[in-house]
Image 1 (cartoon, rainbow, N blue to C red):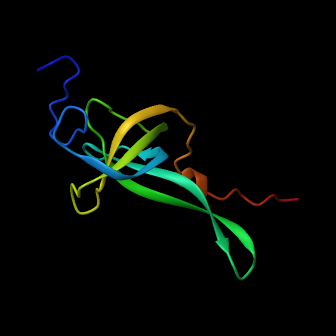
Image 2: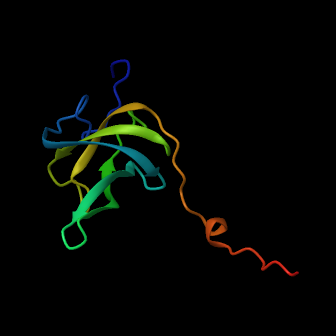
Length: 117
């Protein structure tokens, strides 16, 4: 093995996986799966009825090679590839930097006690 060789056949740099098509930049919101991350990015959608924009987001599962090893909060670039599983059609190509992300937990949804006067 060479230095920095991850040994993953689904790595676009050290393996045989060919990348093509679409490119997205987003934030990693989950890295709990093995060699898989969930990448999310915000977008604006125009609603013609109200002639306004609405905030929406897209989430995609992407393969995370060991040589890249993206973690929660990383701002990453993902590229399209052949289907690697039922839901994975993208691979993480590189980490662009850190970005602050708030992953919702149950504490975010707890209601405060009403104020008694």
